[in-house]
Length: 382
Image (cartoon, rainbow, N blue to C red):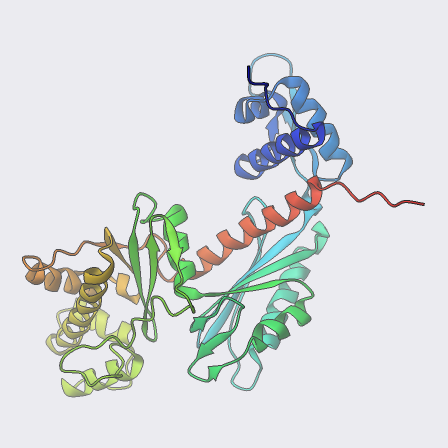
């Protein structure tokens, strides 16, 4: 006869404590009855765990529920002084910093163009400090940062971009300046995570997000998980071979857009947005620029599709502009008999990398704080 599994009461309290903390992070302030329903715990267990969490400074009273029938019930919430995480998106032009709590609630936000002479680390730290001032009343520490950047990101946080490999120097400098752990992620991968978590990819087992900004990059999700590749190179589709382009030539970039514009008699210094708007107004030359870019993006999708066969491609950044979406779909329809490709539009547009950084920062913060709260302090011997 098999015996029932048994475990220490400390483990049970830890599991119950995490269930309640996760419920509060997911749904906000709740009564004991609501926590019982959310976790399946008994009233006694909920009361005992809340007493433990309150003693640890993890939860606090959050007013009274007067909407439900019967006696008024007190609500509890995650303690506002548990602290924050910094979510950062930095591209070639600007940096965007958000302070988020364990519930994923944004408390402060700063955005500024990158000064020509200022170091990226100094710029980010200055924006974080401005966010700190905005939430000074909450008196919460910043426990970690998630930073999305363009370029290849290795497993140890090193960056390889147009300036070459940095050997982890950016991450190390930012960690030292912020005084907290820093996680570096490729910005397109963060955009893909945003779509996977709460966007157009939520119902897909696999997809490739194509983000067009200064160049084009892909974030690849396979079986519900982000695929970074062995060395972080997965999704670097900018230089996929395309006839008649020479090997190593970028498929789409600001320079490419300028060359295409010059070839049809438009301003070579105009940005892609200007050509898209002009094409939307019926400008024939601008429409030719957009059509060529649309064709190149479809050929990128075709190359990825032949290797990975994702359920869909999600268009993000400038690729989500309605005029370009229409051009992409038009070319895709031509290729459909040979290779059907399904295109969706990003739920978050240009903000997708920052949304992904916020989600990842909040998730990492929850993991760090909840582990710290529920791990008993080691007893010191005499």
